[in-house]
Image (cartoon, rainbow, N blue to C red; front, side, top):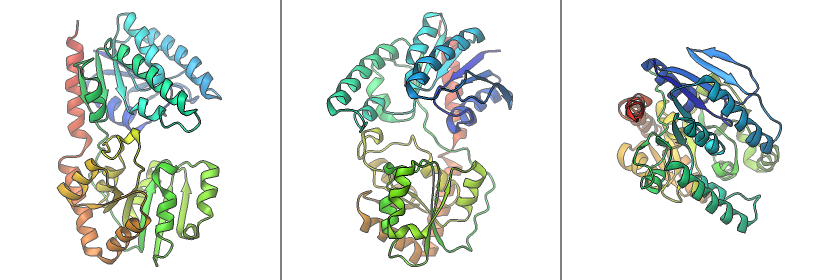
Length: 371
């Protein structure tokens, strides 16, 4: 039996992509799967996957320096055949495992050079320098790893010259085979995820200020200062803020809402106005038959408006556009329901994890053949 070990110093042990999709798919296929995390919740075995915890640290610097060393030590102790890591800060751990004769895969979730250039806490000159240095380290490493998994086309386009064994595995959802939408509810917008300024919550709250009989179900971890800023707006009275909740509670929000909203800013991490499919939010809404209001990224617009016709794409900075989109779906409930049903059908037939799981297994079979 091939022994596989996934490594993360940042993500939670039950991360949707790492544990629920990749690790479980590999385990079902017959691989012996381990997962090394740094969350302080101890070792465990869940659904046949062995979880090893190296502990948590109280600040970012300690986490990067100390957890990387502990993860490398534990990884070498496990003596697996294939190592699959998920965080840029584990690049040197990956290189060390490669030097020890192991097969190593780098799973690239984000456009890291782009995100570095947008770090507001760094001096603009330092952003450019750090982004440049990371690109150099990234290219050096990618050339040496056995394979690269990425969540977006832009990563493949940037790095395929340095490693031909690169595969695009986006974040399509694990489809709920049976859902129970509640159509007998008042007009309700929903969002579940990181409550940050990138998701334009302030603009959405402003957009609903003058829309009668609408509410905003908002759930997820939030920075306290950002939350206080949102509360200052008149539209906050229409917000039902849930805070951080369980996955089952998220399902309840989707079940009892009428519109899913995903208005994200144009940014380098989203490949400018092009967008990418690394985030699962669109597909979660489609899975729950929710019509969508989202950013008019060219890739999103191609899928949401042109291909499936399951939502409305808007300029994320234009409050009037957001307001008009919300009003249209409220005033045309039959069309909104049809949009939701078209989205659900697309997820069942195409945009689902089952198809990507086959792609992941095929990729692993190729990794096994590498001498």
